[in-house]
Image 1 (cartoon, rainbow, N blue to C red):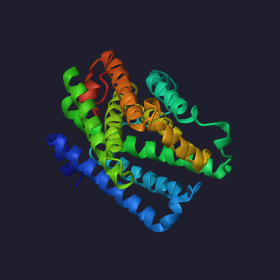
Image 2: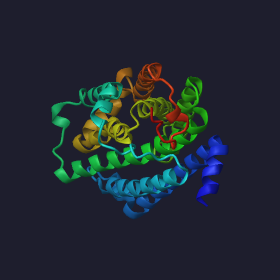
Image 3: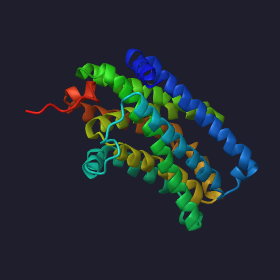
Length: 292
């Protein structure tokens, strides 16, 4: 079974990556529907966060499932979850920190102080758990598995590496079309797809440079954090007022924010790729190092 699966991913990297992404989308949608069935209308109650906790737990478990696939197809590396080098990797991902700072500023600066709430500590912990579980799940699937499968076949030269980066990013962006199940605004969903595509390119390039999934998991989680945090610490009235402002102020419009942040992600991706040099370990990740 293992040999057949590995041989298939080696001979059909694009098709196998597409299958993994379809599986990823399907399992995520099923998980979301299950969470909705469990909590029902309580999901829409202001300040209610437990559905995010359960959803995050499900994502965590699914992430372990895809880690198993990483091992079975032969793309997992001992350094993927190593702690050594994470600090340097986080510094290398400075572009992601800029996105986090911009997101936090545009999400919270326009909100008046009177609109802020003081939620229970447990609610904040649930949100933090959820965004990190999401980062773990998506990074394992798309960077740890899909990107590595493509890179094994395409990574013999710089052109192939760039192709693997953006092909995996395109699959990641397409996977966000499933957001139509929770957001009826088509333009906003399409903007999210573009944002995810360019963010996927950035995270793939960063993973390529660092070899550490912890680096991309942490930055991915922090990029997502402001949006979820805002729904907990801002009153419904404050959120409604912000929504009204976004109709007249383009800087507060979610579509503009996703598109502009996506463009920044593209720039940061190209900067990371510009300084990358192809090594044999990229195209043959399972190969033993050569002793001099």
